[in-house]
Image 1 (spheres, rainbow, N blue to C red):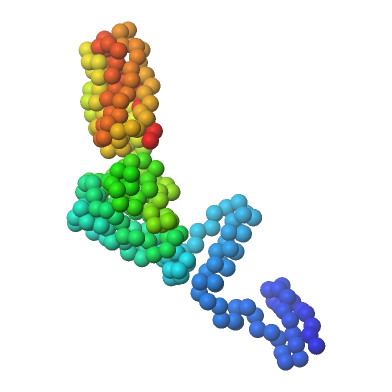
Image 2: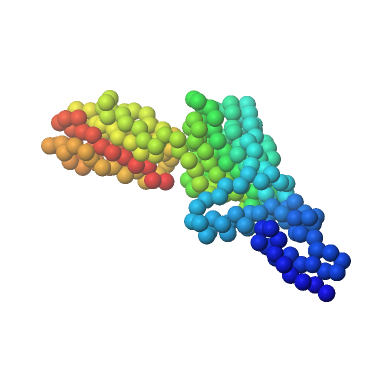
Length: 259
């Protein structure tokens, strides 16, 4: 015979003639299965409350492509060599400067679904990743031909079908203003402001966010009496804004690199 009752938590428990049945928490559950259950509960709570619930569960179910949320710290002493990734999701890249040119660029993921975030921790150095279409065999499927990580920029990748596919990126510095020094300048951001000097008809903006084929949008802030129109042409590492005539005064403009 059996009967039902509620315990102190309000959850039903069953009793038999041999005594109460063991609670689920008292049973032996595989770590991977337990983690999946806990994540499902967290997802359900987030859906109900409309909020976000962050988990930092540590486990090693490599067959399912899941990894520890722990920062690794590979030092890049040679940009022509492959970057050996640690068993971690948040990976801080130290040392190194320039174009990563090894194919493949990163060591392979262990299973489909492995997620990593690469963060450049260098204050002055930059690191550039190249898409598989630019560097054959890089095994990187990026949203743009190249991605340059400046100080504390990051990129998120997921291992799928034998490639690291970009799912997002974060740029620490969002905008650069060089209007105080009209003329050519440097702005390693995706948007900013610049100015054409008096009597000039072109401005070159050097930016590691720009590649040949990038779409650069320009909006004039000042209405010059002679230079009334302009166009932007992108190249690797820079873009040039050319006016239809020499300016009669300093002419400022806003620009955005849409890749």
